Length: 150
Image 1 (cartoon, one colour):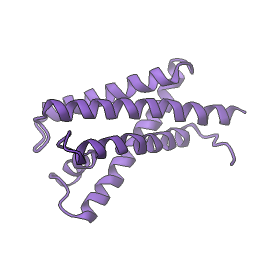
Image 2 (cartoon, helix red, strand yellow):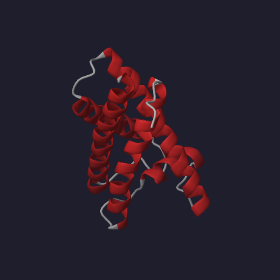
Image 3 (cartoon, one colour):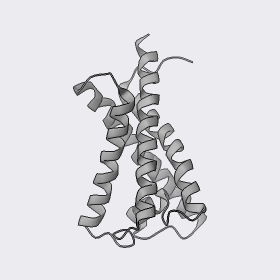
Image 4 (cartoon, helix red, strand yellow):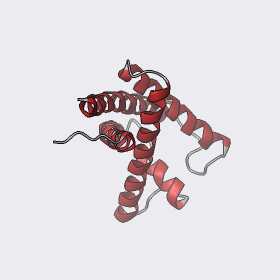
């Protein structure tokens, strides 16, 4: 496979692939009854003003969620230039946690319906999911970046 030399594209790919990792955890936490909201519920409220009510709405919300993760991955790809290209895992984790905190803060500040009150278990599950996303983002971007430099 040929190396992807475009930084924006590498960031988008890393964001999406990292999203797969965190989504597995998020959906597991939801379906075992630990968390009350899925990531696609967040995306659905942002897109429709409510949680998805059909499989097609959920699928489109899921697509929107992954486009957001791609954007966040691209932002990370350029932020890392301004810092250093070392310790990708820590920087990815830190970035994921900061994004988690910012999303929660914005939802609460703007009193987004259906999302402005969280219980501890859902909040903790989403923190773990954001941590996994950030770690995976850092790891995947590091591998893509190293391959592009060869």
